[in-house]
Amino acid sequence: MHVAVVTETYPPEVNGVSMTLARMVGGLRARGHRVSLVRPRQDHETRDGGGDTAAAETLVAGWPIPQYPHLRLGLPAGARLRRLWSADRPDVVHVATEGPLGFSAVRAARLLALPVTSDFRTNFHAYASHYGMAWLQRPLLAYLRAFHNRTAATTVPTEALRRRLRADGFQRLTVVSRGVDTGRFDPAMRSDALRRTWGAGADEPVLLYVGRLAAEKNLALLVRSCRAVAAAVPRARLVLVGDGPLRGWLQAELPQAHFAGPRHGADLAVHYASADLFLFPSLTETFGNVVAEAMASGLAVLAFDHAAAAQLIEPGQSGVVVACDNPQQFERSAVALASSTATRAAMGVRARRRATAQGWDGVIDAFEAMLRQAMRGHPGPGGARPEATPLPPSSAGAARSAARS
Image (cartoon, rainbow, N blue to C red):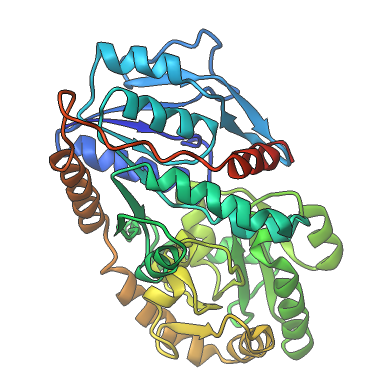
C-alpha cells in the first residue's frame, strides 16, 4: 500500500500521539508499505516548505500551541494536499489529529475520492473543564464527532472508549490498541547510581510520575497523595519526569521532589526502572502509554480504573486500580503501596509479565487490517462518494476558539 499519514505532532516532539504514530509508521514501512508523511514544520527545520524525499515527508506551516511552544498546530493545507495527492495518489489517507491540518486533509481526500481513516487519540473535549472552559465540552465533542464521522473508520485504543464514543454518536469505530517496547523498558535498566542522585538508598521507595505537567493530568491529586505518603513514609522520594505549564506550581507544592525534566529513549527507560512505584492520577487519557511502559519496567502501578490501566492491570495482582470517582482511595492506596516493599515487588514482577504480551506486532496487524478494510469498502475515483457530513457551525467555531485559547 501507499499510505499518506497526516499528523500535527511527530518525533522529535515527545508525547503519546507522536511516539505511537512513529511506531505505526515504522511498522508499516518494515512490512514493505510506502508511507508518505504530512506534518507541520518544526522549529529546527527549514522554511522552504518542500518535502524531504528521502524521508517521504511534506512539511507544512504551523503555529505554536499556547503554553506548549514546542508543539505546533498545523495550518490548513487543502489546496496543497490536493495537488500532492493528485500527482502521487495514495491508496489510503490516514489522519491522526483533528486540528486545522487534519480537517483540511479529510476534506482534500474526500474531494479526490480517496479512502480516509482517522485516529481518536486525545480527549480534547475533556480538557476543557481543566482550563476553565467547561462550556466548550459539548461543542468540542460535536466537532470531533462530525470530524470522525466523515471518515471510513476511526481507531480507538480501548473497547471501553469505543463504547463511550459510540454512545455519543461516533460511527465506524475500530479498536487498535497500543504496544510497548519491552526490550527498551526493562527492569534490568535499574540504576543504583541514578537512585543516589535522587537521595534514595536501596530501602527507600521512589515514587515516579511520567507525563505532561499540566492541569488535565489531575496533578492536584498527585500532590495530595505524595504529601500523604511523606507523612506516613518519610523516607520515600518522589521523582517527576516531564515538563509543562504546572512545573513551577508543582515545585512550590512539592519542594522535596526531584524534577527530572523531559527524558527520552534509554534515559527514560533507566528512570522508570530505577523507581519502585508509578503513580498516574490522570482521568483524561484515551490510553496512557506511560502505564504500559511502567509495567514493562517492573513497577507496581497505581491508577484509576480507566484507559490503559483498566485494560492492562489485574487489580491487586499487577497493580492497583481505583474507581474513577474515588480520589480518597487513590491517596490511601498510594500510602499503602509506598509502605510495603513486598507488595510492590510482587506486583512489579506480574506487571512485567503482563506487559510482555502487549507487543507492537499485533497492534500493527490490526492497524494494517483497518487500512485495507477502508480501501476495500471505498468505491474508488470512478464511483459515487458518500455525502459529506457538514460540520455544525457552532462546532467549527468552538474548535477555532479552542485553538486560539
